[in-house]
Image 1 (cartoon, rainbow, N blue to C red):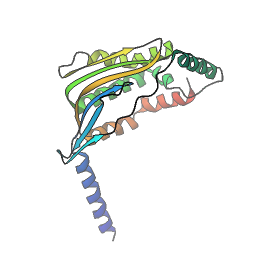
Image 2 (cartoon, rainbow, N blue to C red):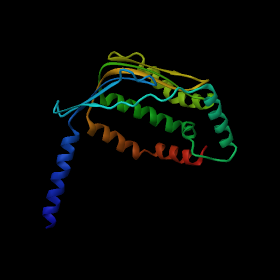
Image 3 (cartoon, rainbow, N blue to C red):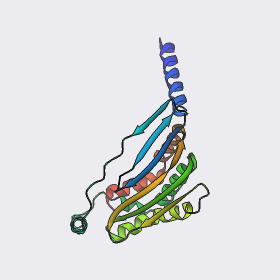
Image 4 (cartoon, rainbow, N blue to C red):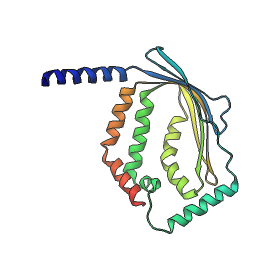
Length: 201
């Protein structure tokens, strides 16, 4: 009985690994917050699965008053002691280096065609945006001079904003991404960064 169970588990694991080794292709034309004309298409198993994915609708425009209110709310929260803070992890150099390595591992794992990306990002807090740019800046610098596409990331230090405009075709093997994710889970710098997030500083 035990042998039969182990054999069945082996078959299941082998089948799962085989499925994860089949490339997934994502063809996209996507913008945010303007979403008119967005298209996302996923292809798997060499065309056996070919579906158009739903795209999110754009949200209401963010007014300046809303941005100011959010900034005031963040300042009030800071006065009430430690809180979970992603930017606390960015102060740790090993964590930043691990995030950079993750980005480069994922970049090498993806086969790209006609990739064009423009991203403008700001948190509404100049200090937080500066910490975020400490991670994104080096990545952006390396990605601007690509032979197989163009990626441009621009920081916005005044307003809270996330503007994205991109198109292209990405092909990835899920098993390879899974291996990268497992390596990230067992990375000591990541766990130290998460402890900093929970501590709030």
